[in-house]
Length: 201
Length: 75
Image 1 (cartoon, rainbow over the protein chains, first blue to last red):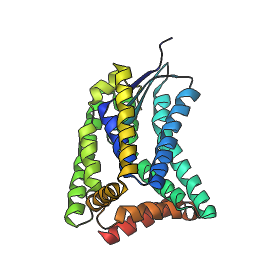
Image 2 (spheres, rainbow over the protein chains, first blue to last red; image 1 turned 180 degrees about the horizontal axis):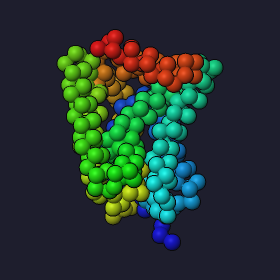
Image 3 (tube, each protein chain N blue to C red; image 1 turned 60 degrees about the vertical axis):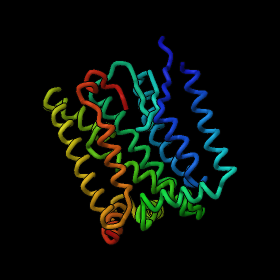
């Protein structure tokens, strides 16, 4: 049996160091728990479907899991959707806990988790929403048409976010959305490669 | 090769932690600067807090629409 391959890219190292340096401790913990819940959701679904985790890659775009084993479209969809579902579950639980305990960092973690979940559900690759769209459209329209649709919609979503980000920047609200849009456009992978190697979340 | 990459990651993380401990003032200023560039009026910060606080009381759809209204109001 092949061993789990763990790949640590330079972008991932820089991102981790920048977050560790910049973020206040409570924000760092809130972010780690929110991101951890999301990734744990993917991992648990992969294992629940009897598949094998083949590789982990941490780069500037975040954590990427590669899995192996026989599964169908529904399996791929469940794996892609399990991250956002776990993120929503953590957000709700952390919010309820913050309500009872009055801990502000738990409310922050809940808010971050919900925001990350909504962002992740955008129908654009490499986000989970884009992967869900790719699997669904490929199943309904066929591989080539599904790929084209996902590719075009990903670009359209990225451009719309870029325009909204520029608008917010000009209104003096900061560059957060613009940064999110640039990240999304830079990280867009070709669906051709993804169709050959579907088993990535 | 991989071991070198892990060592590099460890060095970067230790350097980040060390700089954070030894020069807290510079870190604070860097954080303020990052916030002023990314979230000039604190809208995102406020949105995160509102979403986190309201979710368990208002439910998912109400919370999202509340967050959207709040962001639209600021924009």
